[in-house]
Length: 416
Ligand code: FE
Picture: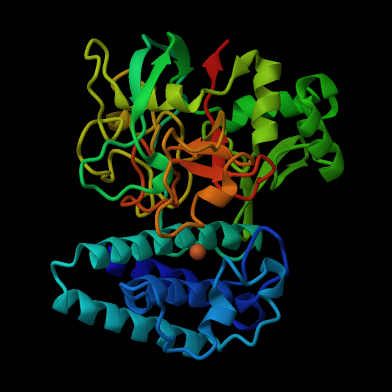
């Protein structure tokens, strides 16, 4: 896991030059040079510096805490810090990794170290996804070495889902899970109908072309306030030329692909589309029920929509597969037992719910992961084409504020 994450990190910063290492000061991205150093700091802090008695030893890098502690270094100050240059930052990452490997060799059976090594690998994978959408935000070239090549059209219609008693959340079976997934608890899911596919570009364009961004009746109050403040008239990166919708994909424009899922829409845009189309977003419980259960087998819950096997290329469009969105009709092998497609991979899916703790929530040692964000972020499920396959599962809860359009998010709907 550590190797896979690091290989990806290095590929993502390979080829950055000069001013690209810092980039513009934006609230939604980090300077890539800062983000790189932060990965080393995080790994060193949790795997090497924290002692059993709660004290913390010094860093290999002088002033590391003043530079890279994300909980303490104000976001808009990260462009002004005396950061080591790229070569020195990469040396720091390499030195930390070597020391972690050494410690893993000597403390092979230490469950604490294993937990924190996994945490640092997962943290690095999450930042890899963030670095990928940063490259999209900043119109840098897309990640190298990926080809599309996955066919599939649309995937219309709804699946009927029986509902019933359900255990929402992760089961305590010894696998790594984050605090916000703990633990499974009983909920009751009413019967519902869920779209077999995410909303496509073509479906979203109908709303745009019908003037949806200009009609207040489709937006709730915070959504309309966002739309008005932003002056939004279409999804981010869309541009109409000679009657054709174009979309910027990293550093180039392409014709909007009708059957690919709409991406880079925020929660407000998803909710407005739903109101216009007389649909609704699924709740978290509905999403997880549709992904994890099987018809006629109450009480059985699977880790992935297709079953128990970890994500593999023909099943889900995660990192290492297409490297971008594929049509919503592709990858039928990954269908859930209810016949719902691409619940994992391609685009993150906004849900109706605010991000809140499950009953009995207890924060994990990395206390800043979940708890500070409860109540003002919306939950997304399922991962996207830039999500590491080792990261995602049916119970995974991602969360962003409802105004974020820069992330790789789309949505799936349910019947009213
Ligand atoms: Fe971080």
